[in-house]
Image 1 (cartoon, rainbow, N blue to C red):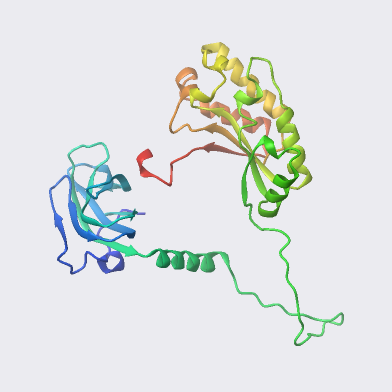
Image 2 (image 1 turned 180 degrees about the vertical axis):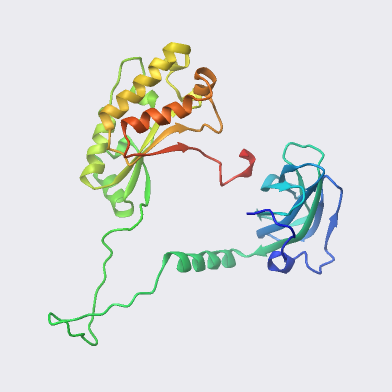
Amino acid sequence: MQCKSYPEEPLYGGGILQGNNKFSLEFEADSPTFLLHDLCPSFYSFSAWITTKEADQSLIRARLSTGNVTYGCIGTVIAKQGCWSFIKGGFVLDSPADLSLLYFQDFEGKSVNISIASSSVQPFTEEQWRLNQEAKINRERKRFVTIHVSNTHGERLQGAMITIQQISKDFPFGSAISASIVGNLPYQKWFLKRFNAAVFENELKWYATEPKPGNINYTIPDQMLEFVRANQIVTRGHNIFWENPKYNPPWVVKLTGTELQQAVNARISSLMSRFREEFIHWDVSNELLHFDFYEQRLGPNATLDFFKTTHQADPLATLFLNEYNVVETCNDV
């Protein structure tokens, strides 16, 4: 969201912070803190507008301590000097809390002068949460349609009875599949009833296809491809390189310099020559935000080179950097 000249009005009118003497704000420049008394088990949404003084910008995180539990990060925002940034997050309490502290700090623990405005804390019951979820589904995923029924002469028929059966989906909805789906008819039937897209869970990873140098075996991926092809399942290729050394073949971890470069070139060449145009996507690099095995050894442009080489070999595939803990938790900032 754009950094604004002035803070907007608080969401939900401030929620339980508005006009309630059970909740107060203790203000120290580098850690403004809300004291929240007698919170009940519920879903909570919080928001505020934040700006900094002195520092040009600072990554600010919101934290919550209930006495029994401390949530290290329940929301983040980059706050800037001279304008207001919006932070929004949430938390779930499973048990009553006599006193809770909701506070804002620089992510790296630096002393930063923080100002906040238009704060809000709003509880929701599980029923309210689900109703809101259903309302969004109805608004975003459903549409009203009008169906006209005519005879062979184009004359509209009144009171006609029609039956509608969905036979395909307009968007991919998928799941990971493993080698156990090969020849497993109950598993295949269960999968096909629910999904029209797939990704191979482990079977294309380097440690699975080449456990020893030069000992390349694509038998299992080939069998899985037969299944997805036969059932017109769009499939993602996962993955070409995994940046976590723990999940690389042991012989690859021992390589450096020219030998490692030759190995990664051979890896791309082998996969692309075998599976070109078989997958709509390729996860070229896996978990690069958390690990950097290849860039440490081959230089900062190693990943870029992986993408360029893969695109040249399979230009129709969309290429991805695959990650985890990007949306669901702010501890991975």
